[in-house]
Image 1: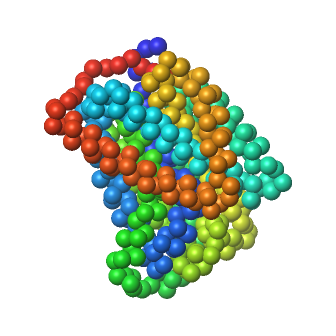
Image 2: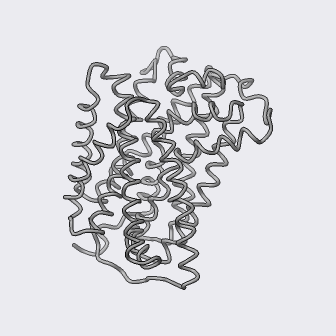
Image 3: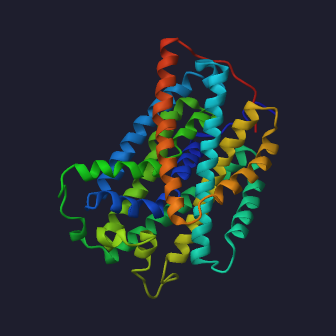
Length: 370
């Protein structure tokens, strides 16, 4: 295999990062914020979460660029030693699997609820797994090319569907601003941890970029797109439904879309279109998560990348079935959110500090992988 054939372009990396961040949060974030904040200041939490996410991404980029062409699974051993590095890598693999399982279980729940009511959720999950494995075994290039193709289409449809919600939008639902001060806003920061989980995968993907020096640009644009989508969603859903109604809706995003319709055009109702696009987005997010986990296993063991993907199917399926209902699925999401904070900010910060103090760098080019 020639050098460079497994490298992904800057545009592909932007699409991959934004795709990983736009996932189940489209449905869960508005209700979670309404429950936590309880005031119309929800949208401020999204902006603050985006700022914190960008600061975390700068730490991740700085750390990764000190060890060019090495992934997190390789350079953490150089910083904290083989044994601690291996333990940390195993935890990161488990975290990636947990996110993947959460995303695909959420995808299965909505598919069953809105499209396939009589179909057992296990059948839905298994079908999605086997479609994903077909893409995964090709390595990072097919994944990046597919996401590069689908991501702009999904983003445009998301923006269109949300903007159409202005038909039922009422500005008074966004007032008053800072009605109860800054306290509720600070409480609303925790749901954004889950929403922006996926930034930590830059620890793996920067090593695969054709131009790693563009990583800061990737972080800014790749995070900026999801922040804009989530901000637009939260503002319009709050204006269309009000905070109190959002608290009592299982899926506020769908509730908003079902509030309006347009006659005389190709689509009069947009809930089915939105669901299809969202399922595509969830699918690509799951693929990214499993790729990271399989890549980690292949770099830690003698198991090949392809075999690792097949092994992980069973692990993800078992994790998917652990939550017995939506309440337990929400608790899993909370665990993921706090774990994401650890892997996107706390752990990279410690590793970067150690690397700077010990003056550790690595400029060698390792062999390409899948």
